[in-house]
Amino acid sequence: MDFFDFLTMAGGLALFLYGMNMLGEGLAKFSGGRFERVLERLTGNPFKAVLLGAGVTAVIQSSSATTVMVVGFVNSGIMSLRQAVGVIMGANVGTTVTSWILGLTGIDSASFLVRLCKPASFSPILAVTGVGLLLFSRRDRLKNVAVILVGFGILMFGMDTMSNAVKPLAQVPEFTGILTRFSNPVLGMLAGLLLTAIVQSSSASVGILQALCATGAVGYGAAVPIIMGQNIGTCVTALLSGAGASKNAKRAALVHLYFNVIGTILFMLGFYGVNAFWPLAFLEEAATPFGIAAVHSIFNLGATVCLLPFSGGLVKLACLTIREEAGRAEEREDEILQLLDPRFLEMPAYAVEQSRAVSVSMAGLAEEALGLSTGLLADYRQEAADRVTELESRVDKFEDQLGSYLMQLGARDMKEEDNSILTVVLHCMGDFERISDHARNVKEAAEEMHGKELCFSEKAGKELEILAAAVRESLRLALRSYAEGDRKLAGQVEPLEEVIDELNREIRKRHIRRLRKGKCTVELGFLLSDITTNLERVADHCSNIALCVLQEGEEEFDPHACLEELRAEDNMEFQGKVMACRQRYRLP
Image (tube, rainbow, N blue to C red):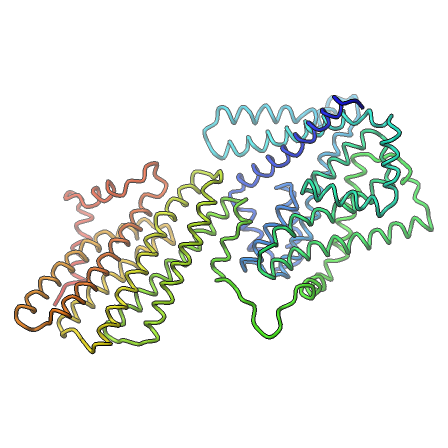
């Protein structure tokens, strides 16, 4: 093997790893977050969890990606640690599918149909089809299919290139000598562990081992312990993803490690114990790609069957390793905010869904703050006032963390519909934050009145309550339309906002009349103006939210044009809704 053969092998390895990465990304985008939602919802039964983990991993071609997702679900509280165990075991089984596909490269026959079944034969057809779709298709879904096809073609071309490049190594004594040393099970296991830890994928490292089998110099005696080490090495990705996560998320990563370590120990003891009494002749034979795939599958299936009944023990072992701190409860971030897990950024469709869920919770906090603050105007309670302050602070925290997360998510390649949702969330979360600020301002006005023992006249109090009720309804409609994506509800906000503007103007006029008659003080007038101004601005933010919902999915986001169209004099439906709102919120 000369320098140029080495370059060819390195190039083939690069193409193989890039193709595997491209294939996984294409499958993740094509799924649109569906695989993640299946993992999240259907893991109550351990056997179903194993099947789901295996199925999802077989499709996305990466046990590491599945396990990292599971760590993220546990970190955000979506999945319990016990639910995660079955999925992790299933992921190890699912990853063996890749090795069987790669094993097809070893098919040797003169039959046209058999030769056509070889990946080296049909992968160029898939790649050409994929490139054609990429060049001429404008639909995102077809482009995702194209990425899958091209990724598979590149992967198989890289595999074939590697296999051809390493064939001359069979004649190199130094190389065969190194592989002979790996017949020592411990050394072989460490070599497999190190290789997989570097490439961050057991599927990729098994593929590299299958390519080396083309030399004919790799015996099963050397290959078996390497495969065992590869299963342990794949745990590195999950362990890294658990860094900085919650204790349960770290435990989920440890469950993955313990499963593979214990499975490897049991397999090695059993396998070499049998070999000690009844020598296994096939260990001296040259390994084949199919043989590698078979060993990989037997180990993972066997480990799952043996350890699934003891999944509770794996959980206890992980909990013993990472204990709760004695003497005080674990400090936890807000559970809702934990949904904004960086691990989900690799699956943009799911990350968008999580971001929207967090923004809905943020909106709920703002709505609660406004309801409490307007209630303080008639019945001041310090506990409720403190709660408004706390809610406003929490909404600020939501805005900071959600904003940072969305900036990272915005840099990802997403489908058009996900981009549309992301745009709405970005526009609306600022409105939610401002609504909580106005709720705090209303609370401060009520606090000042309580401290100075001031109160509005009976008429002014009733007028203010009517205005507050209209604003609360506007906020309820806007937030429901946002949470449910309901355009019909969103269409009811703007007519009510117009009536709120009219109420605000009329209340100010009435206040001036009372002031001239000496029935109200200037100080109360300032407070009333401050309260009505904040309530009117809340209604404006409700209008912004509703307009975002109405324009979701449209190519151009132009709220002003949408507003002009709604308020047009010839829009009889809109004018009818305004009249209905005036009847409901008529001042006495």
